[in-house]
Amino acid sequence: MALLCGALGAAVALLATRQRWAEGTATVAGGAFPLTAKGSDVTGVPAALAIVGLAALVAVFAVRRAGRFLVSGLLALSGAGIAAAALVSASDSSALDEQAAKASGDTSATVDALTHTGWPYVAAAGGVLLLLAGLLALRYGPSWPAMSGRYERGTDRPRRTARPVDPERPEEIWKALDRGEDPTGA
Image (cartoon, rainbow, N blue to C red; front, side, top):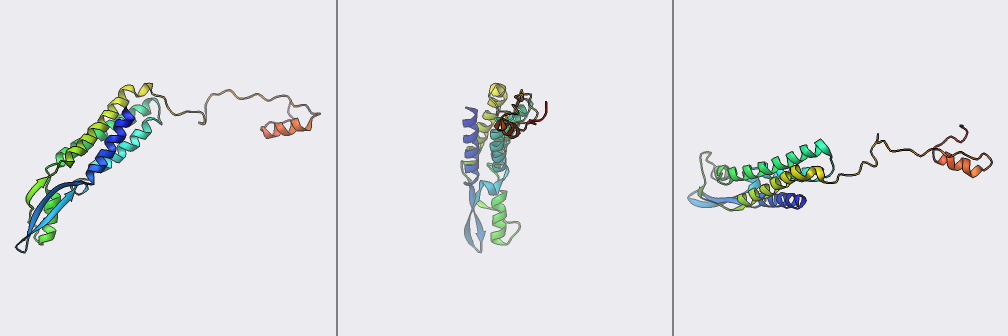
């Protein structure tokens, strides 16, 4: 459930930042010039935190113990950050004001007939899903399986003991050498 919420939340947040968040008009030479601002024009925080959230979502299953706790916290914080940034930026007009200033050549120009879309709230919903994934990982993460430590160095696995080599059988000597054993040692 946490994996599904996290992946869906990050995808929704990334998708929402690529959509139109605000539109308006600027007065240029006596005429109205239409302006639009995508979510990434308004703020880059939700998209960046969605990528962090995806990375943390993958890392939750790769780490153990304290590492899992830290990564789960990062996952939850990235979701909360997406939601907060999207909600704060939902009524922001600074990106369109900059475009109006460029279009008119007047640095004090502002956008007229400003309207906002629902995409910032969709990004916030994606952040809430990532937050939920992080909270689930914090709560249930210690009981989840982790990646195998089979190939890690320093594991205390018992090693095979060397079989005694029969010096009368040359193939046994070669097999011992292939295993990394010294057939001449006793």
